[in-house]
Length: 475
Image (cartoon, rainbow, N blue to C red; front, side, top):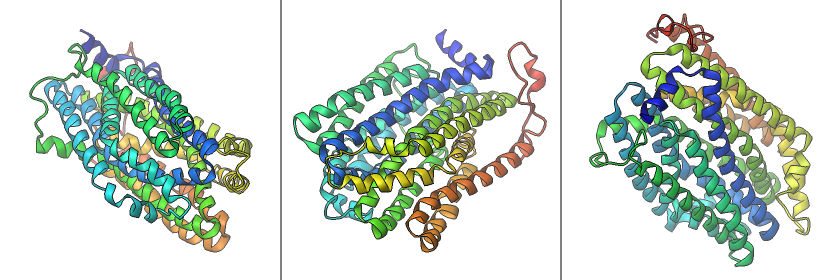
């Protein structure tokens, strides 16, 4: 059956092509998501002006705050399903699907709709001023109202990939990207809906992608599919999903808090144009980060499933490959940011806008300063997601929180006092380097204790796999 082939591939296929087959669709899908965010920003910057770009920078952390709740359910469900399928517990894996549907709608409605009456106050808390509050509000209102659909789409897409269908997950994101790129100019420019049109294009695109995802799970021949009796919530399974999904959720929440600190600092030095510049740099960085996240999403079902069946050497090998690939991607990103910073920034603003020159100057400086240690970011992301994928949420939470709270916030407070405005940008660079050192120290210690005798070059097709299975030492 197709179900057996999908799962046996995770167990038996050579790790290198297996990671390629799972990561490449995930990378294409994640880049597609990032591209339409970048394209939206370009459309807004060209047709709505520099202050509209600053407004989008303000909504970025608020959007991440809502996405955080989505990752709690989506990535938690994906990791739980992978491990459960590896253990052969198919009925429980179907219940994970049912829980993913119910929790996505429940959390999406709660997080998206309840804060709407206080949306202006929330945006002001994140640094909105007189010139940016209206465009930020117009954009975020539509995003919040459409969040139940957006959350369900992304969470089920994670689960589709984790259950053995990375290409279908990729196609759903590509469909969403194409719809957004086509519809956004119509809504923003032709119909003159401005920021409201940009947000509406995003929600419509995700709703169309959702149709593709729902069709997949309605097919009875897929590994996981909709059926009766899987939608009643069980306390133990809800706790498990939320515990495993907690690390990326907390990471996003901490990211929102950090962005709020960044915005406050930039308002002090450069006003609202400083906030806009930081938003532009974030979008440039986000494109490379999304590629790395695609690699980690390809790694996750392979590591989780092989952990479930006891093939620990394959778990370790896929980790090493993912770290290597992620480092290459962030190295390319760092080089791009240093060499082509000005050219990239100019894509986001119209030269006819009177405020564009200052925004370009600030964003170009920030891109180059934040690119100094960007090469270390890829390995950090992989290591944190690895611990989540193998069901070690406490370690994942520890690494993610120390990066944001232990390193970044103190640097963000101290360096601007010593260096002025460049210190705001360099605080991220400093935190990236220190987090890299901590992450590798924790990972090497963990591998030495848990997989002490496992040779990651073994456990490939054609070998006697039983002799390479290593029972982890107690940590």
